[in-house]
Length: 198
Image (cartoon, rainbow, N blue to C red):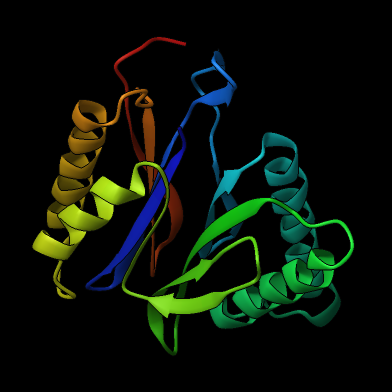
């Protein structure tokens, strides 16, 4: 019962993901970080099959690093999103990755942005995005309370409301969540919201 969601605020982007590693009716782990730091100013929240998620996110992270190493400049968030979309589209007709991505980044020229990329290589630049069963509740909460000029404090409060809604309304709800932020100072972990211990 995965959930990954994110939103863009005034000068920052925020990504939230559950931390449960689940297979069928078993919870294998409750501290799986599903938000990968791609580079100093990009975060990639992923949901989907555990193997595909781990393989694809590491593949993207290494290729983004390789591009920066070869060219001396990092990819923009838009370029990284288009690279991911291209890789998912190529794999779609061979051996598809069952992975959905919320990509958040901050660029000096364009500021913060979030991209919605699903397993069939659909790419959209959005203000708010969500994947997984929790998306039904988090998108409803964000539709009601989100506004583009949110401060970090307002976005964290909205993320906590989304988490509480997911925990209270979803039958098999993930208990732990991680919140990460990217802004002009870089990508970083903000906090964990736990109800169960590791």
